[in-house]
Amino acid sequence: MSFFLSQVIIGIQLGSQYVMVALGLTLIFGILDISHFAHGHMYMIGAYLLYIVMVLGGFNYWLALIICMAGLAVAGVVVERAVYRPLRGRPSINSFIAAIGLILVLETLVRGIQPNPLSVPQPIDSTVHFLGTTMEVQRLIVIFGAIFFVILLQLFIKRTRLGTAIEAMSQDREGASLVGISVNRMSALTFALATALAAAAAVLMAPLAFIAPEMGSTLILKAFVIVVIGGLGSMKGAIFGGYILGILEALAIAYVSSAYKDVFAFGILIVILAIRPTGLFKGREAT
Amino acid sequence: MKKYARIGLYLLVLAAAIALPLLLNMSRKGKYQIQIFTLAMVWAIATLSLNLILGYTGQASLAHGAFMGIGAYSFAIMVERIGINFWLALPLTCLVTAFIGLLIGLPSLRTKGPYFAILTLCFNVIVVVVFFNWTWLSGGTAGQKLTIPSYLSQRWVRYYVVLFFLILVLLIERQIVKSLSGSSLIAVRSNEALAEAVGIRSFREKLIAFTASCFLVGLAGALFAMESGNLNYNVTNYLYSFYILIYLLIGGVATLAGPVVGAVGLYWLLDRIEALGEFRYLIFGLILIVFIIYLPRGVVGGIKQLWEWAKGRWTRKEVPSDTPAYRGPDEEVRGIGSD
Image (cartoon, rainbow over all chains, first blue to last red; front, side, top):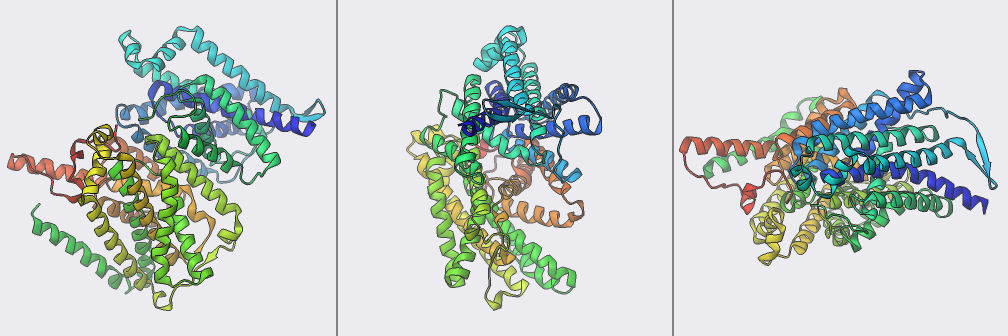
C-alpha cells in the first residue's frame, strides 16, 4: 500500500510539471491559435539558465527561481516577436514549422556548447516520512510550488485588468480588438507568462533529474497530449489532464514497464484523436 | 519558358548527374564524394515522398523518419534473415511501408494541421522507443547487417542505381500530379470545404496521397539500407522527419524540382561544413525560420515566382503557368497548407 501511495505522489509530482507546461501551451493556443511546439525547449533553456545562475553564478535557489522566470519571460517575448508575429494570419502549420526550426536552433545550440547531462543540487537535501513512505523534500516543493503558481496565474487572469483582457481575447479575438485590447501587447504578455511558468517548472524539477538538451522534446509531446485531452484553450482541462497523465504514467512505470512509458502516453493521444479529432473535451478545432 | 528550353535544361541536369561519378572517380577524395551524392539522392526520394502529402494536400507528416527507418529495416530483414532476392525485396518493402502508412493514415488523417503533425510525430516517437527496446527486431547495439549483391559493391554502381530510382520517382510523381487525382489533391489543399462540396472526397484523397507517400519513402529507406550496410535503431529518429521537412521547405514545396534541389543541395552543404559539428543544425533551424517567414515557397518556388514576375513585366500580358506541379487552382495559395 505504501508503495502504491508513493507511486501516486511521484505521479502527482510528474503531473505538476506537466500542468505547468501544458497551461502555458493552452494559454498561447487560446489567445493566438498557435501550436507553440518549442515550448518544451523553452523549459529546457530554463533548466540550463538555472544551472548557470545557481551552480556557476552561486546564487541562492529561490533567487535563481525568480531570475530564471524573469529571464525566460523576456525570451518568450523575443520568440513571439521574432518568429510568430511575422507569421500571424498565415496557415497555422506555418508557425508549427517555424517552431520546429526554433527547436533545432535551441537544442543544437545547447548541445554544441555542453553535450553532457548536468545536475543541479537539491536546495533542501533531506527526506520526509509520510504514511510509511519516504520522499525527498524536493518532490514536495515541486507539488506545492506548482499549486502556488497555478493559483497565482488563476488570480492574475480572473482578478486583474490585464488578466481579464487575456481571457477576453481568448474568448473572442475580434470582439476584444473592437473594445481596444491590443493583440500585439496581449500576445507578448501571454508568451511572457507562459514561458515564465515553464521556467518555474524547469527550476522546480531540475534538482530531481539530469538536465539534457533533449529534455524538452518528450515533455512538449506530453503537454500536447494533455492539452488535446483537456480541450485546446481550456485551462481547467490542462490542469486535470496534467495530473491524470502524471499519475497514470507513474503507475505504468511502476506496474507495467518503464521502457515503454512514452508509448503509453502517445498511444492514448493517437486513440483519442482517432475517435474524436478535435480532442476529448469541448475545445477548438485546429485549422 | 519555351518547351525546348525546358527539355534542354532537364537533359543538361541529367547529363551532369550521369557525368558526376566519372569526374569524381578520378581522385581519392572524390570517391567519398560519390557516396555523399548517393545518400543525398536517397534523401531526395524521401523528400519527394513527403512532397506528395505536404505539398499536394497541405498535411505535414512528421512520421517520415520512422517510415524510412521501417523501410530500411524491413528491407534488411527480408534480404538478410528471410533470404528474399534483393530486387524482389525492394517492391515488397514499399508495400510494407505503404500498408503501415495506410493503418496510420486511417486514424490520423481525420485530424488536420498541427494535430496531424503532432499525431504523426507521436507515432514516430513510439517507433523509436519500440526499435530501441525490442532488440530482436533492431539487432540491439550490433545493429542489423545487410549484405548486398557483389556487383553493387562499387560506389558508382550504387550511385547509378539510386539515380535511376530518383528519376523513376520523379516521373511517377509527375504523373500523379498531372492526373486527375493530382488536381483533386491540390483542390483539397487549397480549399477543403469547397473540394468536398464539388464532390471530391477529401479524406479518401488524403489517404491515397499518404499511402503513396509511404510507399515511396519505403523505397528511400531500402536504398538507405543498401548504401549504409548496417542499421541501428537510430535510423527511425524523428530528427530525420524534421530534416526531410527542412529539405522540402527550403527546396520548394509543391514543386517537382524543389525537393531534389533542397535535399541534394542541403545534404551536400551539410557535408561541406562538417567542421562546424552540431552547430550545422543550428544554421538549419535558422534557415528554416527565415524561409517559412519570408520565402514559404522555397528556393525553386521563389525563382519561379521571380521568373513569372519578370516575364509579366517584359511581355506585359498574363502568362499561364506551364510547370507540371502548379497545374491546379492553388496558384493563389501563399504559404503552405489550407486555411
